[in-house]
Length: 635
Image: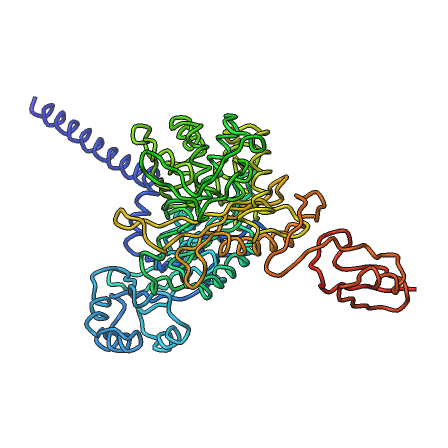
């Protein structure tokens, strides 16, 4: 009985021990097979370390692939405190090279951490500084590759491109809006050390960084450079408080050029004020637009049929009285009897007040909203403003009158460009955009393509055609004549907006603007120029801003090969002591006959012979009377 009892207990113990052994074996098997990767990762994390290698941000390029933002390779300082033997000596030497206090450097190299990045003094080091550190040859002191953002054109397009911080994060403009695409994935050099930080003799592992995605813009760098040059000249000549120019394709909403002053250099943005670097005036600035806004009143009136440009007449006596408020015309004594086409040509405020009255407050306000005012356009840039409109309840007779000619409301430049583009492109309101595509950095294959939206119709094609006609007439015969270009069709509208301060209009302080487009019969580009309080010049948009727009259009003619035309609005004109006449075509004539035909011009010849093979400028187009005509001769 006793034997059996002992025997039974032994069997029980044996079974229990066997089960425990099986459980242990199973557990070991489970850990070794099923949990190996996790445990190996945890173990490796105890003795592996990484020296960071920053990835390059994606490039930003213009519509033709010209690089606007790229990267340069620099070095940064990192330390591994456990590997540094003489911390006092190392701290002293590094503090002298980096020009920081000994205490600050000692704090870095004494930290209880596996790896310490010396920030910000040790970031993006110059070649000379990096070489001095490298020559010290201290254990635990490492120089690692770091990517630094670089803008090869400096101040050009600065507000659009934006800038990045010390850690290569986008802080403004395209850099901010598309940061998640532009930012790459950092790499590292992985090495191994024991618990005390001593480096182990194991092979290092290089983890390659993945560069960010490239972003291509709708911007044309060549046109942008012309715009930048015009703004530099404006600042030098007129010393305005602010100035801006932007250009857009009215049929698509693609931004072709955009810049403002003051601007900044994103390579060294820290030297500029926060107000300057974070205010992209073409989308941020809000102000009373003045007479450029009359384009909307004109479009609404033509669409509603409340005025006929040719048959309806208005007598401008110099002012109009609205509910006791006297609204003056810019011309003392007024323009007298005029058609409504002449009201547009002359930018006559009282005439536009009548146009607004014929429409009525509700109808005019509906058109203003339909043209996109009072809300953001949706352009893919940060910092866009809404602008301010009267509500229908606020719009009494005086508010209706002033709104009709662009006073009392607040708009942004991008809203105006978008709205006028819709008025002249056939009646379609598009969302402006500035990124055309994103591409993979290695293969340049397109990841995402941006195309124009379908847009929203705001006026009919026939109405848009009439708007184009009226605005071409403004440039040919009215206040916009300083934007006229011989043998090309240009339309536009001038603006002279009085500024407001503390609820009152300022005296002698205006924003002078011009909104133009070409070709007038089939617009391919809209240009807006606004100059804030230029000094030493007559305060009219047609005097200051129209010639600037003309220069931008001339650049566009060269870039986009706009053809000459004889279909423009015919006119006899003389201004600025210049008279233009149709240049005779003398190709095929003898030299003597050509000189007789070109009497009054300066004839210059090249080549040999007596027969005119080629002439420049081309015949049968406008040329300045008395100008130089070059003739190529042959036998």
